Image 1: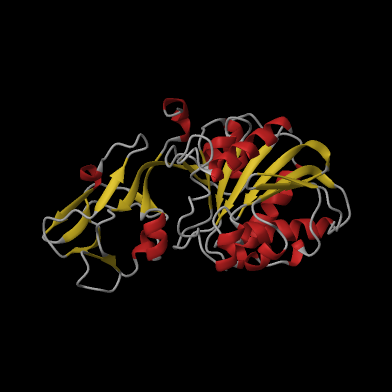
Image 2: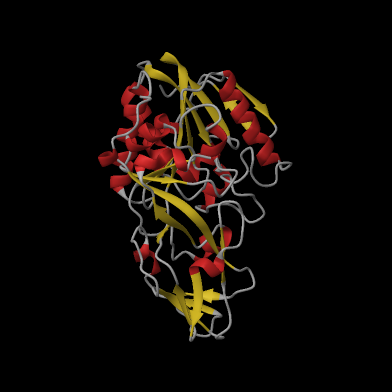
Amino acid sequence: MDTVTTASHTTALLHQREDLPAGLLDCPARELHTLLEGPTLIHLAGRRAAPLFVSVLLHGNEDTGLLAIQRLLKHYGDRTLPRALSIFFGNVSAARLGLRRLDGQPDYNRVWPGGEAQDAPEAVMMRQIVDTMARRGVFASVDIHNNTGLNPHYACVNRLDPRFLQLATLFSHTVVYFLRPRGVQSMAFARLCPAVTLECGKPADPHGLEHVSSYLEACIHLSEIPRHPVAGADLHLFHTVAQVKVRPEIRFSFEDDDADLRFIEDLDRFNFRELPADTEFGWVRRPGLMPLAALSETGTDITDRYFAIDHRRLILIRPAMPSMLTLDERVIRQDCLCYLMERMDPLRLGEHEA
């Protein structure tokens, strides 16, 4: 399937083609720029015409999706795929440097329709991708990510539709429902088809690659996505209730006692643990300083609902479960510290659907 045929066209930032550049299936993320001129959408034919859409490298330092796609396509070689496949190779320039995004770039998973900076060239590109896949009658959408902290493998959805949950639990019984941040790929595609985001652990984790590869293989063999509800025993469902950021003026560290905020050194061990009130996240230099901002899914500041300063201790004041806690200071600045979640009852989903 690794062909040198040229069949491509370009609109603004987006390059599209209906073949694979020679060498793509063996190319590491840091070298993709030698084969792709920039963000590229590749369409491959299959026995079922409605394509599975897969996005990889929306963050340039998260390469498990690329490796899984390469493994899948190598497996099929010159054989016809069971289903058409459209693959978006996202932030190729950031991947060259092993970074989430370059300084001055928007986050490629915040500028899809409904998100940030909708006049930016990257946002225009994402609208073009959504429009293109709508015309092609997209079957389902899978956005593949890694994370930098200790997290289990899990899937995320933006709708509580049974088809979305069926697609999610095909990957993991642990599923997170969220409405914030806006502008993510899965939220844009949810208007067209069942859509999920996969969180596959750290990039170097071989189990993540195996897990995603098996999942994609299963997806391209689906003739349809079941519409009946997922059995309660097969679904551990959580609702993201807050996005937590470090305030931009705060100097923070995991080592320096002179910083405005010093986090505990192994903060990411809290991920997917149901923490009690009074759990300590770190210490502040000044007793009255609140260094965090927690925003609800509607954008309301709810910091005081979850955090307080107690004699310089930064503590959680009500039970919650964090996800995506990371020790990577650059990622914390570029994105957020974590999300806070609460467990949902699968038998009462209709009460939560937006």
